[in-house]
Image 1 (cartoon, rainbow, N blue to C red):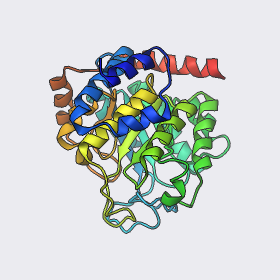
Image 2 (cartoon, rainbow, N blue to C red):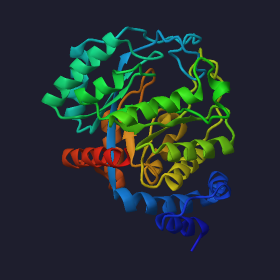
Image 3 (cartoon, rainbow, N blue to C red):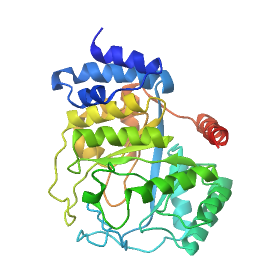
Image 4 (cartoon, rainbow, N blue to C red):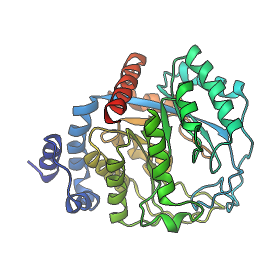
Length: 342
């Protein structure tokens, strides 16, 4: 039995990965990556079988953000050529939900740029979510930034099931990426959402000049934060942003990162997110031997694969899309877990 299988079985027995073992995953020789992914799949299969959760983004507000995040084309310091617009209409959000329903997408993500939502913007989300729940019964994830008192409760009451606020990078690397808010601001926002009963979603962007130790620290921070869903983004360097020329990733290293997050967070939804097409490239299918969730379609200001290509990829792998019934069962599980932990 190789070292990766031994480690996988120990993780399945409830052991936590040591820092040295975590670094060894990221340093796995390229020739052994298939062995690593096979071991990683044993953990993924134990908890999720061959099911894949599908997610779709609605970019409800683009650009116009006062923050200075170095990776983001929507930030105040970005010179990227993107479409900027204020909060879209309710009909636009509903049209996106209809499309998600038609594609059998389990989770519909309403995302808005900015430091945090105004009360009026929360009103708009609440109004749209109420109708989406009535028409389609989709699982709703909101990603609106830092929340003001009372806003999380309103979102929860309207039917928002999950709140996303990524830590993005390690605590150590955070000041190199943005100075307009703190790492603690991000962690606190996830905790606020958690207290209301919304399922916590928090992830990372790798490829932003972080060290391997930073990547390990990110995975462990999300384990401690107990995020139910962990989106793993790979930097898609956009012209006009401070990180426009940063291209540190390659497909095999991206697979090692996904494996690391599965080993450290074995029971969690690991989602391959932004940048998968340009960083994993032809190795995208192998990523699903670690992850059990993907975004379908476009991202915020960058394009993804066509929805039909994503479905073909899953079919070719012999994987199955999570059904509506299974999605609803996972909602109940998340809510019961949050009630128990509170």
